[in-house]
Image (cartoon, rainbow, N blue to C red; front, side, top):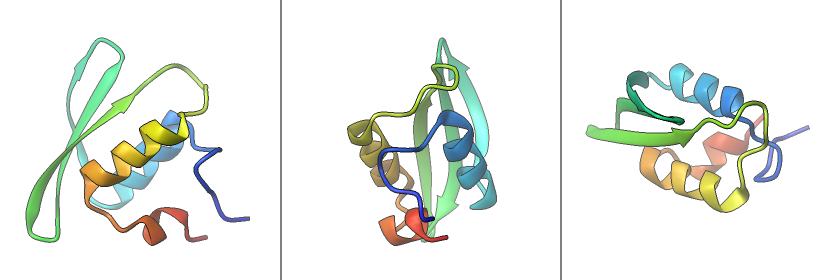
Length: 77
């Protein structure tokens, strides 16, 4: 079943970004900052960590925009 906006946890986002070549840059309190290249641009993505809680849909949309990765790639499979 494909993932949508309502069932992404921190570990899901983290593993997806790592598969796309992003690396952990630094952490600040409960926020993890990943850096990577996508479409020949340097991208900095902030991902909040709150245990195993699901990330809110609006926050996930912001993460998708920061990464520059097409939304279709996030939700396939």
